[in-house]
Image (cartoon, rainbow, N blue to C red; front, side, top):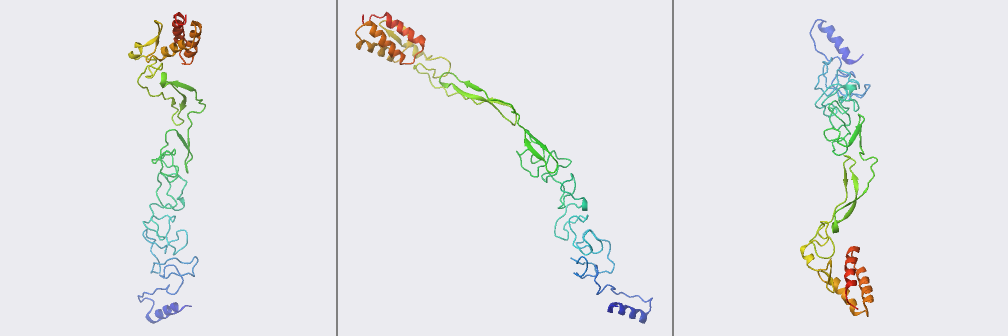
Length: 299
């Protein structure tokens, strides 16, 4: 029998059973609630804040489970998962909720296993979430507001798995052309997989001022349509072919044949070779050759 209990019996014998007294009957005994943190208990005590032989019911702001087994034994620090919401538990962690064994990182609307309230971005689709991929990023299918983004589809609840929708499945690009004259260009049809909208990659060139060079510089579909180009045409021996020759270079090149030939036939042949080298249209060449043939040059 321990010394404390011998002392108690002697005290009763000397003063009578009915005499009021106050003795800590647990002093010196390994027990949760004696105010001493002991490692001989099972499990060993982590804390012991209660100094009364019989602890009061466990208070919500206590950090030591002196009088109530919260799942780890008596005289253990309170913890997230013990079913008691504490601003700071015995392990020093802040709690915003605590449903004990019902805490879950996969169940919608449940208190999480770190005693945090369910929130957008925690990887669980709760009642007010359209999706939850475990982050607050945009442009990954599930927005920072946990809403499914356009062009994406999200499945699963812990977490959501989002994949981009290809709205252009089966689409085949086709070659295209655009622009006129010197602005002519090529491209192909396009499709945006996120929206399904189709387009054209062809971009016409930039028009420039029209000059009399046999080209459509201003890209309006007409060649040498500037008024200045009509002032000069190819004239051979008084015959006006009507073909623009603003610089007179075409007529000059044809007339140069006269100095290298001995007769009209050779002159016509030389002129034809020169015209072929210019890349003129068949219509323009025929008009000029008609005047060359009617001329008296070399006869």
